Image 1 (cartoon, rainbow, N blue to C red):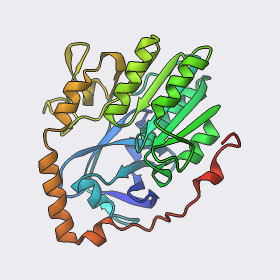
Image 2: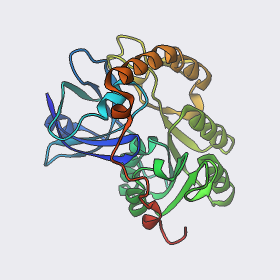
Image 3: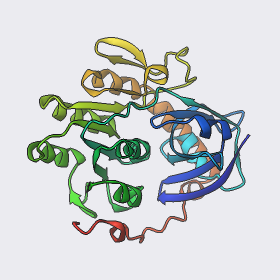
Length: 299
């Protein structure tokens, strides 16, 4: 059992957990993930390690409620425990001195982006961060990225914070305006990562994306997380989760990720019916929280 030492909402449907996992905390590197199982009747799901504290022996998991298991996690709090936490899994991010590096986090993808962005900055890169979300209260870790980045841009679909538009709008402008962008790392919805790949490929900018296909055992044996990379089959759990964006077959990946949407929706509906929709979807998050307070002055 892995005890939850702390928990807090980052947005109405995104929660951060600090979990006691000594061995994983000691070994974890940016880009790696764990596979968890809440209880003996639960499914296995992958979650990226957003941060770790080697001295405390803890890891941070940031979870968005999108399916039955992640919605179930919203009901967990300090003092509860997770049955299984397996990791660290996956190949760590390749961190090098590229020059000017752009880190892009779309939605909850910012949780995956943060440890990678921090490692890029520690390596000596000039770090530009682009964060995007549907609206202001869906942005997470903005304060941490603001402290870390040489430049930071924020976009929201509705214009409630930063620029109205998409992260790719900012990226397109940077590619045109910057003397040189040497490296791009993007994490977020597949459509966003595909568009980032299309833009950077035109300018021959090295680009890496972190993929989130269906994943079960984390060892490559089940084959559930297979992806097409450069015309060949790879497994995201053992060969990734990061890949050269320009070699990813996004069309096939989208099709595979949509295979079980109906079943996932039915499972979530049953869970909400059993728990009571009000209980399972409520959160103490303050919708009036003013993220503008932590934005740099150039906003």
